[in-house]
Image (tube, rainbow, N blue to C red):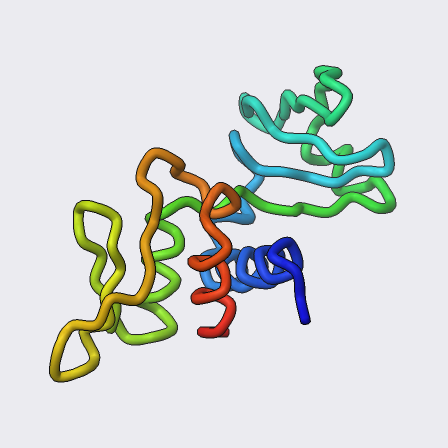
Length: 139
């Protein structure tokens, strides 16, 4: 049986594969270099300012990064809009999101409650195990 973290990783990778904009080198994108994992906090022209896991700010040029062995774009953390866009792409718009955070399945003759998104937490990794399990089952 997979843990919540393993399921979350699989769902996140699936969403990133369906939405290439999450893999663009810009603010909010995570990268992995030979020096460790870092998050891009700004981009000016082809220069990136990154904050690594040890809270060290580093400047990189895209050209330099592309020449580093072990450099990999991890991508941005999916948010609610990314999850819904991904669902629409893979399941033909069958899910409806209601304003209070409820996701329903509109593919049936009647609306069926599917899961709930905590609107006070915008990122997928902040959501309940129930929601992660639901999204994982759709893969």
